[in-house]
Image (cartoon, rainbow, N blue to C red; front, side, top):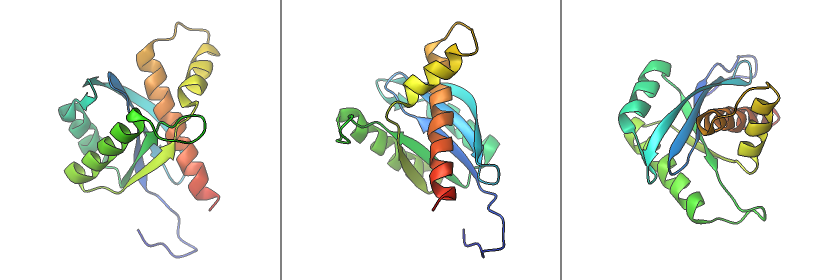
Length: 146
């Protein structure tokens, strides 16, 4: 989306925290640079519930998507890194949306800390969707500073 320097960026994005059992989903706005945790979609050995994802894409009409890229602490890839990339490529192929990848190291730990600070019982599904929010907000912040 071409913008002149005086225009405001208003893209809507969906963020995904890919996992083999669950995929956290968040929605964010480029205008505010913030995101909100939405839902957690089931996955069966890494195979997403595409019907649920299609409903989210239809509901939010994102301009682009961001997928968390799980990396080892040294930045190297592992099996889940490649599977997350494949998921991102599938999102692009199914919905013809630009896909960005964002380093997600420690996002689940940050999500768990955020949820624990609210003094409530933490569920794995909650961690996944809050991790998606953190991933998406990190990507939005990286774009604002570039």
